[in-house]
Length: 240
Image 1 (cartoon, rainbow, N blue to C red):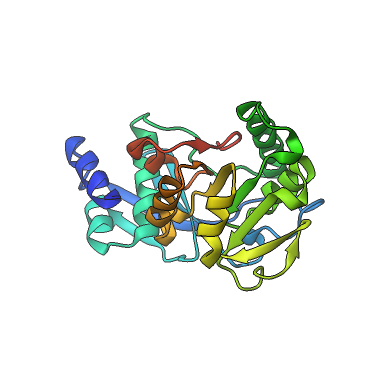
Image 2 (cartoon, rainbow, N blue to C red):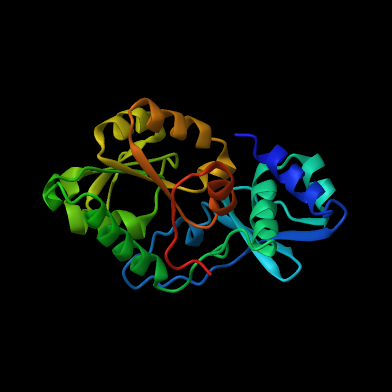
């Protein structure tokens, strides 16, 4: 997917190349009463946020490099997380997308509940215990809810963080990302973190879903702009 090229086309069409933008990591207040292993709270990932003309755009990433300058400079720097954050902020400014700011407090848990209810409605031909859910990327609130709703034996999860891989988390084992093809091929429906847009794995995931003819739903704020540009299904119930 030519994300950078798409962004460049948008900013040129709207005469925004020389406009200033600021990008920096931000803290997100999350409720840890029920879940205490959110990657954002354990210094494994950070939320990079772009600020542009009163609008913000997020990118979930391990790259926390700050930036202040013009949009043209963002494009020239070729820093993918910064490009994603910029894309989200600009498309929000242009009113082409919404929910570009990460949710807070216990909202990830509420979002997980809403997502499980959505999936049940989307797969009416199957009983709850028969629905196989693939999850690409460690989102503990979603994993916990999917296990509670559909059963641990029907939920397959992968992640790239070796501190999670091979361990049982929220009732199910976490596989390495090398198992993505198996997980996608074995699932009725696949949920995937939008941070794949920022870490360079998005194309591979989409291609695997197409190979096995699987419906894939990307979640979160990071994927907002990319989902709009490339007609990708997205779920983000409580993003701001």
